[in-house]
Length: 110
Length: 121
Image 1 (cartoon, each protein chain N blue to C red):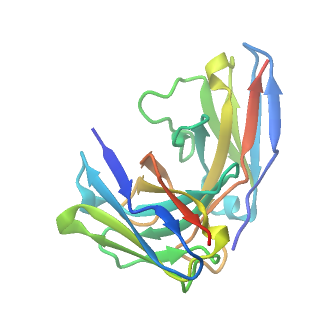
Image 2: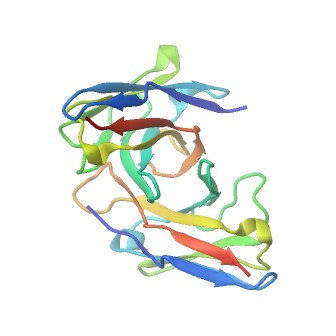
Image 3: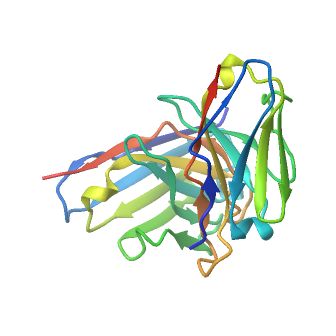
């Protein structure tokens, strides 16, 4: 099956901009989706498709993609954005109905 | 309001079976694919299985293929996961999640709160 690679941890100063990346071959064929997970809570979808935000997600969250890399950008990070972030996509390998997640990135807001 | 409520988790011995259920409400269940995703304690998310709206397309992670079976009952607005030959490494919080699409697209729009499965002797 495909793999998606994320940096384990990233930090950002309050109010600054941070980019979280996700790399994998499947991203050449499929868009990534991004999820935010806070301790003890279920994940929440924050970005999907080319750059779409579900209702209720602040517009400081945005997504982009180039080649085999997808990125989640938080412009003006807030304290409440401190969380784990996961990317996922369809699996482009032999598992035709499969889905794959990245290992997650722990975001610390300083 | 979309609600996904998982049940059926618990403590089970290695090699035994368990069946998880997910009761869905607040949306037209048979208009969407559904998934199971798990998270081992302190670890990341792992996709387990997905099923299209009419059960015509089903996928499994390699780690559970041949042991787990996903199914749905659209008349009961319910999703299931039959887990056989359970192993210690299957210990995790199991989430039920609603897809964005009618097919297995992998964009998980809503998630339940999860049900905990512990495999131990």
